[in-house]
Length: 336
Image 1 (cartoon, rainbow, N blue to C red):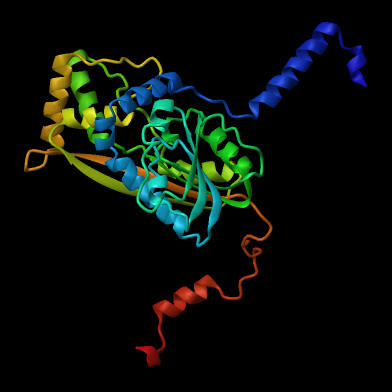
Image 2 (image 1 turned 90 degrees about the horizontal axis):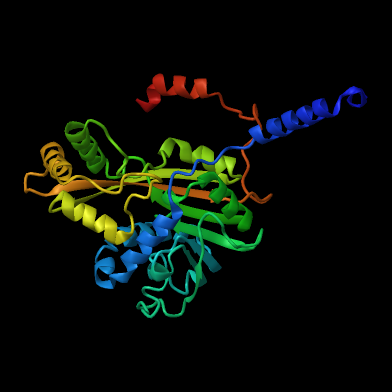
């Protein structure tokens, strides 16, 4: 009723205020990573096929662990979508007893087709479809997929909540998502050494190792994205390298170099040498090698479906936790 008494300017200001209030309920997306740079890094890494295959050890291992979690479901899938597939680390561990078809989605066309001509023993009956796809813009229709996996790719996504929402929407009811990504403690030894060297030599620090997700946030992100029956677990893999230089070389060959927007893409030679010395001093092994810790965050989430198990209503328990604890503290004499 009162709107007819407002002047045009007041109406416009009121409308703008309402719109701002509506927008404020949505989360804002911080653009941390340069996706174009990441694509170029992966493209270049895949061009050196020999070196690229030499450094598959880490991604192959994590992909095998993702497939192990898929096997735990005890179900045969017609189609599995692999988001951020790289050259096909997941499909190496799949066979026709698990899945008929795998759709590989990868940002880098060179990486996607690097091993397209290879037929792995026992895996040749699995049909593989390859799509050049940005993980931030999945092309699948709602309620169309049985299962989605992602192995060591989502840590480069700017909008992780949005990517998880897209995956959940694309899944059929009771469809499953299984993912693995690097966690925040990954290569902390290198990060610390670079920061200390830069602080000592240049009086400040800049990001040379990309920020990554914290395991404590991942469960809530899955729930906010609309997944049910969520599970998050953390693992660490320590790889020993001859020197920090070999570690950095392998990261580059994996396509895992820093891609933070506006980050300084170089290190002064004396700063780099100082970081190597600090690395060996703080973390070096007795045999002269250096350890690099890779923290892996595994996640599982299911698209809601009425057939899924549900928690019992509050107050429906017939046994008090207090009584159970008291019984344990004061066992029956017959049981002693």
